[in-house]
Image 1 (cartoon, rainbow, N blue to C red):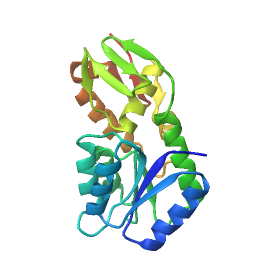
Image 2 (cartoon, rainbow, N blue to C red):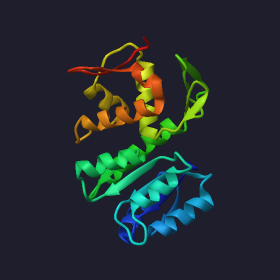
Image 3 (cartoon, rainbow, N blue to C red):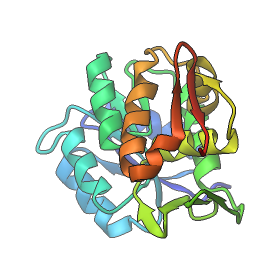
Length: 225
């Protein structure tokens, strides 16, 4: 049985029931909130045991963006946004705030469960490994990145993208290859999602952001001068 707790946040009771039924069959423990205020209340009470959040965008009292902003002030818990919009600009905005994955309504429950499993398998890895790349240190077990001893706050997707670049040091990686390996599933947006993440990672790495090279017409490469 899976003992991971998932917080479902959606103002539609039928959506919550659908998600609850499918996830319960997989052995996940479920918490539910019908609006943003309730979601934050439940999260504060159960933050240590919640392993993932399914968060609707459009809700009463507090929308999903507002909830996400508050959670990201002190937590990197994986967040999958449930949205009926599907606008590219909304998705890019969400990634800037720290969204880890998007699921557009209507969605396939089986696909959603598969994505949840993929995210949790990465975030709950029991590997104990620390690597150093010219002062950029990545602690795989804690999913923590430091630059010259100072911790850098990254979203799950930013962390995975940086780790993929570091794992493939000195290798030119195409945008398609990055999408396939970091996003894991077919992505129906475009490569500007990667560019947006790279820009933010470079900024957070400070002077060491220069090690992420843009390969014109190809993609990106991590290379220490």
